[in-house]
Length: 132
Image 1: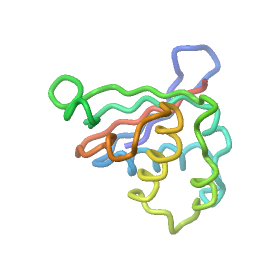
Image 2: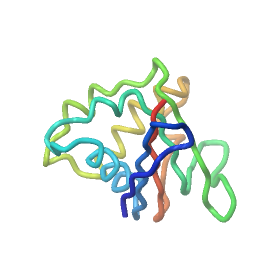
Image 3: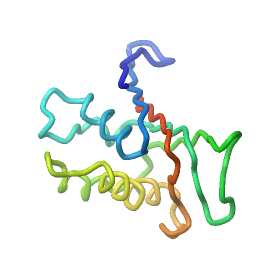
């Protein structure tokens, strides 16, 4: 389910999607940001992302209450969207998008972490993308 709603700030919209995997929820949000599904939504690079669901780290196997956590990332200089842009087409799978997002955006934002220490192994995720 994907919804577009007005965010907390006037004249800014946010997009929210819930799905069985982070990749599916993220894919639905990104596709809702552009009328041309073949074109990568450039505004994605200047948005904030709120991820609700099971987040696994090296130090904590499960974060949050009842296996759900809210994880918010912004658009810090460490995020590298180029690999996602290069793969963005009708053949990009939700699993591949999830991996690219984790490897190049999330870990770019939180520098110094190894990809093996982070993951989204749950089966229920909500992603909200909003204006930064």
